[in-house]
Image 1: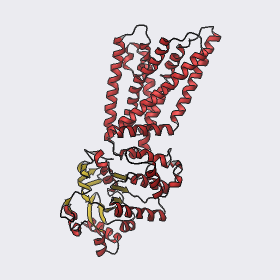
Image 2 (image 1 turned 90 degrees about the horizontal axis):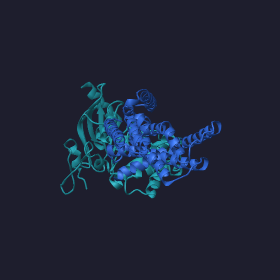
Image 3 (image 1 turned 135 degrees about the vertical axis):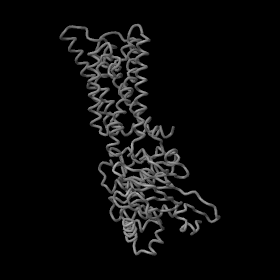
Image 4 (image 1 turned 60 degrees about the horizontal axis):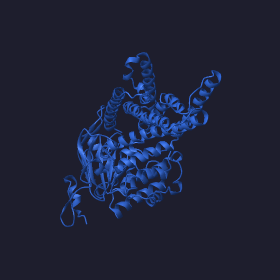
Length: 250
Length: 263
């Protein structure tokens, strides 16, 4: 466990020092500002009510979970795997007294940690933005729904991160991995829209998993069905990703 | 005290102490083979290192030195054979085998966005007994203490190499595996590092496995020498014995490679 903890802290420090995480946080704040301006625009030009205080964070999440968050996940995952292989720094950790399964697991844990931090920052800022600039009542139930929706979004993002990690270990170049991931996400989104009845098969549809948790009456079958698919995908990509990571000669 | 009998036991992999007890080698390579698709690689390498040895691993470009060292440190998988370090197989008990090993393989890599201190701090987290004092001590030993808070991206090749050596000795390992450790160092740096290796071997009985193109340095540093040619370990002897029969290690290397080439 000591090696796992050491490797996890190291991964966090490396990504943090590269300032990419900071860049994404700035982008996230930018997205919240844009979201708020769009809401203002609708309210004044069309005379509509816009969103209320607790709907605003959910509006931001729907936009954020399909754009900036997957992009951030791709960048961090590539940096932690393909980036280290291409810069030849992977051997710095591989020659330490830690098994490859521990190193692989700690890297995945670091990616999930950054996804959670990014979600937390956006959630807090969007709640503050919602309260400051939008009308409506704030109740504990509504705030709880917002927190829950952000929390459950960690699951589909982790499944996506494991797919990206698998690709980063399969393809040697970080640039190639980046473009392949973007193509997969775009095609998946297109297929999801084109074949709505089969959308459960496409990974991008899971980014909206939180919306099922917002329904007035929770549909346990839908929730569990998508959750099981996410778990299955995660296990499959974790295993395949680790197989490639373990077999890789430096 | 190690008896002189060791000199005669090179191929038999036996070390006997003053009480006549057979000792376990620090590192043992057994029938190690790895072939690439182009036919190059290493074939049936067998060798061992005793405590306190400074073993020089010589070979031409593409002879298989780096391949052997990568397999020894778990960076590469062998087709067959095994590497035993401190009685543990690198293939099946990696953590135990590498617990007391420090190394530089091919190039001394470090994280360019971190400072020298942060790079060593990263490594220190894998060990329980490394504190700030020890990090500063190795930075001082390798002559880069004054640059400890500088980002590695701005380091010269020589400074990166010194940081690599600092990383390798940080945990006070009992076995240090170094691939071209003097790359990029100036004359002063070479002499200083050579003295460091000798001091660690004499005072702390640290065992070294060093590959280098700089034969003169190997002659001055190593007490044992092995020559690898076209993937095979063709010769192995003590430096003292080699220099009894050859004027320089370079002559020995050339004659061994030539005679093997003719064979």
